[in-house]
Amino acid sequence: MEEDVQLVMDIAEEKMENALVYLRDELAKLRAGKASPHMLDSITVDYYGANTPLNQVSNINTPDPRTITVQPWEKGMLEPIEKAILHANLGFNPVNNGEILRIVVPALTEERRRMLVKQVKSEGENARVSIRNARRDANDELRKMQKEGLPEDAAKSTEQDIQKLTDNYTQKVEELLQKKEEDIMTI
Image 1 (cartoon, rainbow, N blue to C red):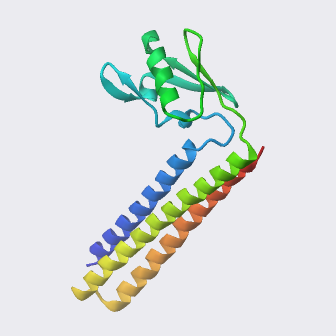
Image 2 (tube, rainbow, N blue to C red; image 1 turned 120 degrees about the horizontal axis):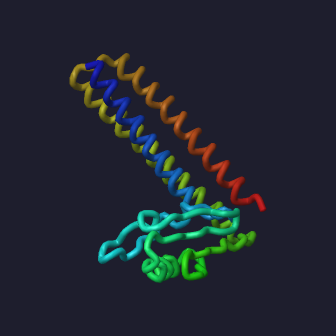
Image 3 (cartoon, helix red, strand yellow; image 1 turned 90 degrees about the vertical axis):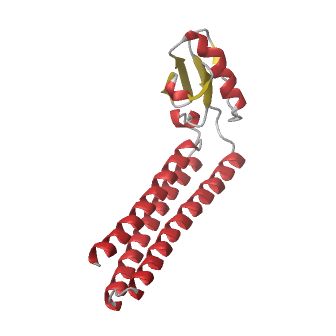
């Protein structure tokens, strides 16, 4: 029985960690006025008939805080990459010099910053909901185990441990959101 209780705890922690990892990935994609290679993570390119992520057909660098450079491994991929970036509707206008694509990341307006902060808060709420769902699933599993013979005090103790885990991950989400919000609002 004790192994089953530990398994429930491990599964809950894994789900909470996955929610945190997903939040980090989503926040990395949000543009905070500084160029980041992660801004192009969602772009796929038609590479010999297969949709391939951009970072698998080119090098993506940030030579300075306002510029992203994309250097394809094959020169013939310049135009398809340029079209893919334009079609992605990220607000970028790549400049093709025949060897690499340069993307100048425009400065954010105050209104755009506020919209990004709202988006960050929305992503944070999604992460918190995922964490609470993991807690609920673990507690439901504990109740089932209690009906099958798990002592009540062991179930209560494990529920408290799960709540501590939930609080810990919720705090991590808050810290990530705070950091990203400061990053966005810094001019």
